[in-house]
Image (tube, rainbow, N blue to C red; front, side, top):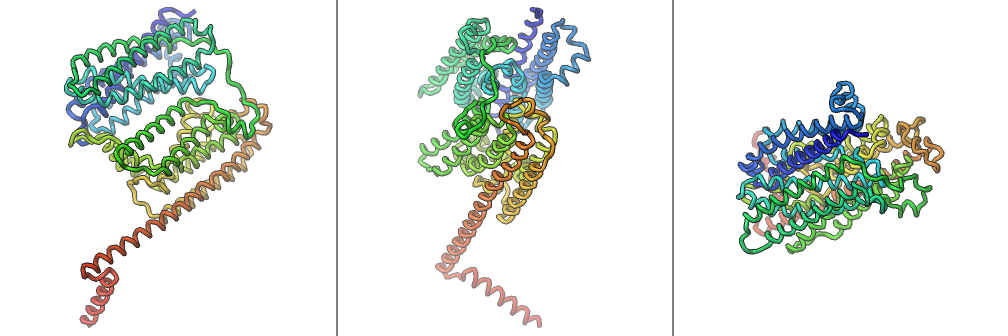
Length: 609
């Protein structure tokens, strides 16, 4: 039986961990987006939050350490002091996955503390914010939800839930500590973010509750009662958020004193909800009646119409689609037009990702290497072309909010700065893009990485995410219509595409020729009844990779030739227009000027003689 003091310690340390991490996220959010900046650097208001960031990071470190100690004591079923044994602690942090995730989170919290005094620029603050969010969600992949039915749904929805809460709760926390004059500027922008976060929290929370509590008896447990109490508090918070937006939408002057009081009450309710959330994360949900099983043998209809939602990937796709649609709406209201073909292209790219991760192809990719390779080709070759031709960066640059003052860089300015930064120029180098695109194939499939990443949900997710990003980067460089910090000649693009085709063909032939399994025993451990020869299936995967990989590159070659011809046509038209303009003004055209230049050279040469 678990010691009540240890259970209480686990709950309290997790509450401190969650609260402090949300405070870190909220402080960085305010410094990066809510407060004004000065030409991309932290303003005086942002500088004032350094102390708050340091204090929050310290409490996050303390919460992490407490979580590690009490969790280990709970696992060992022994006292608090037993968990302090160096051997047991070292084994937990280096050999147990949950301990490794806690250690990673602790390292990030220490990084935030050490960086708090040094950060000066907004882009650095944004990077630190992204790193903090990664640190918060990492242990989620090894939480109680990982053992629930509908594994991908439970884990993915919980990650989305935590990120939404971090931005929502953290933002409220930051609004309490900033000056009243800064609050006037920050609240309107945070109100928009809070609405999106609240929607994500409600939808992901509902999906997670369904994944964990799938029977009447499960809803009668203590776990369910605490979950219901958290739902009630969330509804209250949504109501208060509605009051915020209603007050901000009034044309009359806003009562900021009353708004500050409302924010304080909202923060108190959020703390109560966090306490309940800490208890839920420390206790296991009732067991589900059903568990995931091997799907039936694949058929065309099952591949096309089966669906096993990967909530985390779906959350990212929904966010991308929502932002894209928002951008198109903003342009339409402004009277500008956005090409329908770009929207269709982007939608097809998103659909391909969903099919390869949550659709039938994504489902069977978990059980057979050949289907995994087909999904890889969709994610790394087909979907990126659709996304790149959808021109999301151009849409963002035309619709993102600019600075609220003449000296503020704003979100749009930050994106432009990132594109033209050293990092942006490094990754848009065609050789670097090619190395990531094709070189990562050998690094993944011909080392132990593939088998290790397939063993865990986080590994599988980041592998899919890498395929998408690597493919998007490559095709953005060679056929992208978005602004590129580098001017790459079309001939270089064609050479890069031929190189990519050759390297990919070599990889596929090498995979087809393998005589040993490369998955470290992953597919064999599944004991899939309709998969009889793992090595033959692996060789088949190489053939699929070759066939599906060459076609998109050939299409990219055709697109590059078309772009080259169009650029030449535009250059000819420019020269013709310039010639006509010079003729109208009585000036010699470019050819006449060149002939005069040659005549002058000949005359000079004759004079020298």
